[in-house]
Length: 337
Image (cartoon, rainbow, N blue to C red):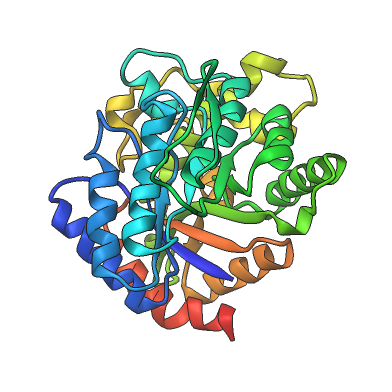
């Protein structure tokens, strides 16, 4: 099982680079960042520095989107990094929740996202692609490799991920929901004539290591409650699309957002987000990984048994460095042994 570290690109940029360098030393194989250029620093600038400071770490956005940059720009950025540092990038992509909405625009449609996946991958790997009706090719790309992993929750998005993506990103760590969604993605891949086992499965969620006391758990919950609000944005989109009682997604995923009253993206991904008070403790416990090291090892083994290839640790709380060190010493070795 691989492990990734996910950071927001808050300034100073040098700190992000150093944390990623240290993550490789600790045994992490992937370094991911958010990609909302209004809220945080431009990640592709930092990727070059991170790749230069590491030897094997793979980097990429969790996640980019089809709308912030033209597809040929995104593909060229990845292809440039791969030419300079070897094939060490992964393109995580979604519809564009925070990146688009914070700028007052709507996320991309699933159809647009599916087109982007194929075009960005083709361009970055040296093939011609259709970009808004025009044939485009990057002539300087002689060969390349760019896995594109799709973030998804709803049934249509899960089907699309299985049909065209190289991997699936699920942003929550609840085992029962993970099993349901991974099965949906693999079923779609099988129906499309693809090998479902060839898809990389990545679960991404906050992790917070506690001392085992009730006080420590209460603190961890408050540090990670923002995540339930972020997931709630996507769930709210599903409810709006399919209806609250459609059965299109598990009821347990939709029940908790009934008390949701809106969302200010100025606080996106931040501890203390005032728009996440509706998120109950039970959801924080299910969606995140909280507790002493043995609880983290137990949850990782449970996810691995469901076919998860990578756990990407969201480190957006007051113990970024501490949780990375603990994973490096007490969790990653146990899952690789």
